Image (cartoon, rainbow, N blue to C red):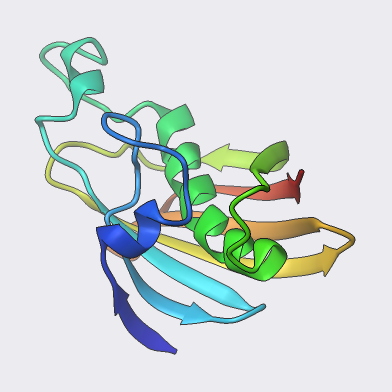
Length: 145
């Protein structure tokens, strides 16, 4: 279902803050099924100072982090029900692949689908796209504790 959840919605569901918040907006969310987020990649990102001077490329681990944070928004709602005494932990990443460099000016579209939910755990399959091409993909698992 199309939606337009802003950064305030996201910040209520993930513990990350500047400079480590890697998702700007949620544009689609179907409960227990899928979520789509957006990350606008700017030359002002602090990691571009050292990765790499003269040829800035978003570190692959941060692309995966953007996927994971988008998934965390959905996982928080699915597993937590907005309880503030629980914390969501990423427990595994499988089938991680990097397909295309991400550079300043790109817009990452972060798509995740639920593979399964059970006993306080969620497994999701996610990908980051730039211009409809896969930049990175992974399967992620998180638990609520």
